[in-house]
Image (cartoon, rainbow over all chains, first blue to last red; front, side, top):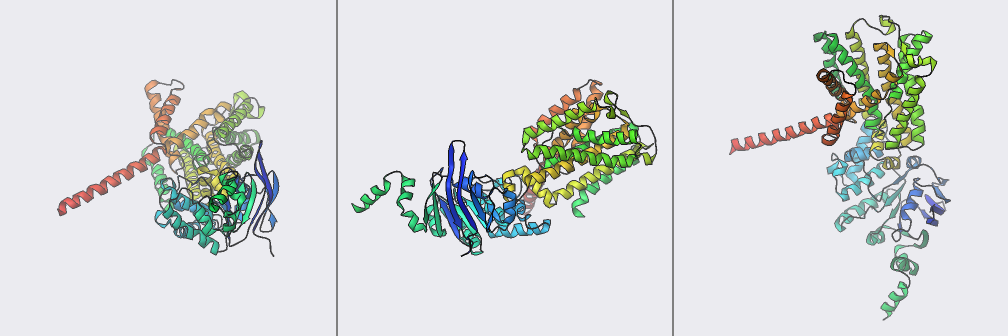
Length: 250
Length: 331
């Protein structure tokens, strides 16, 4: 069997005395949605930063498309097809929505007219069609999240790293955006999503990795992971699985 | 051609001035103003579009001026060739400063301080090195022939500097509409986000400083040809670093006509102050400072931005007014 598009091998990252990521391994195949969950401070965003080249790992390797890309700079990875969104939205605030997306599209289209046309198409696709001429700073949180998605998508990625794109959205906004994410996946893009909105993880992801204190403590299908004792303990504290069992038994 | 129409209109208007104004005082004022506008247009590429505020554009202005002068005076090189060499040398200095500063990851005030330091070091070197004429400076021989890039008529000098400004404006417009320009603006707005979508931020900033330095160096080359004398305090002096950044900031950072409008306002104010107070040294700088504070407080996008806002406001008022009259007429 061919190697998955993304393979992270025993990656660690130390910040001074803190081991933020501790020998974490995961993999993500093309055309699938893989979720990365875990309590706050588990190291999820750090792991994303390492995969996308913003941080160097202290140890371990990142393989992408069958090649070792550990420590490659973000713009080189983007050219190879790795795109990410930021947990805290990072729009080009002074630019219009169209120009924001076009910056991503310029990676694949040199000419201005082509890049702008591609930006319009991507904007329509993620539901920003009405807002293309608005300045990015004037958007609602939900629209800014969509803009993050659109800009990443405009680079025509093979691997899309989504860092909490659903956080801060209300249930109806989440309902609107989930199908959009699914269409990316249907197009063959490998998606890795960090997400706290469990309903979305359950409905979208086929495979889930659980990170706690920098370590991958469980992996498997959403249903398996949700019933894993170590996972429940990581989220709810020591001894909780036993308590839950006794409640159910009693 | 449509994107370049405003530039054509503005340049044509400026080109018509010598038809009406024959006074040397007026022409001299306009030549100096356009020269500052050119230096500012250079700064605007890096500072306005790239968000990298340099405090040391004197390094490029001075290098252009000195290379032009030294090649002519010491090596007998043709003035036009000297001019081209001066621009190239300014760009090279830009590449060196940018290469060191951007590779080291210097941003915002750290970058500003490093550029200031480079300009000061160059000023001190130029004030002691024999080749620059040290403290005495360099005098270019008077030779009023077009081949020597010297003209009997101020009007011709005026048209030359206007042509250089026009080139800078067109260059800026091309930049705005290019992929490189989009990447540069993206780096200004958010460097991390730009890198995430494949922008090589270091390379983009490096390209911008080279272009920026070349344009400002052209202003320095022109200075040498126009005044025929430079020394370290003129060529690498802080005055030009300040005026190069002041004019686009007052006129409108990151807009095509920002530096030109800013130079007109700043230089007019400077002359007005001189007229009122005589030649008290430093007073014009105080006025510039006051104007800068006012602009940053009330029109952060500069005069161009303020004019655009005012235009939008009046347009909305006009539309609202005509709507209500129409309704009144109907009712």
